[in-house]
Amino acid sequence: MLTKRRTVVPIELDESVAGHASAFSHGDDRAAERFVVNSALEAHRAAFARSSALGAPRAFEVLARARLGLHYVVKVRFHRDGREVLLQNRWRMEPDGTWRIVEVEDLGLRSPWTKPDQTQPVNGNA
Image (tube, rainbow, N blue to C red):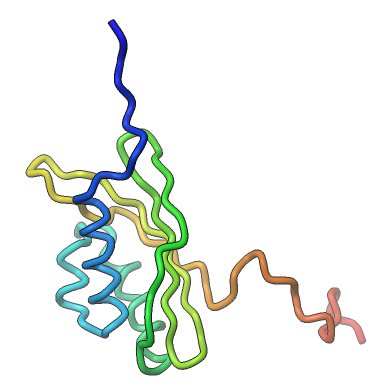
């Protein structure tokens, strides 16, 4: 018997990611937190506070999705007044069929793929 493997992202996950990202980017912490399990709330609140301090929201974009077993890792870039915040969230489907964030990683203001500023000394010595 052949086992079917899921090769596309579930529509419900995409909808949850978009709902969370929209609430997060527009400063609606209560709506954003509805997508987060209790164990990830502290990290989510810290990322939300840092992002909100950077100015008015402009937009968000989903950069990547990867399936890891029964979980999905989703990377989202939030644009705020000329600055960008990059979050990597791990999502899982709950027993009731809803998708929730179980882990939040704030990847900072700069992409890890951006070259470092060449004007700064690498070892701290001038």
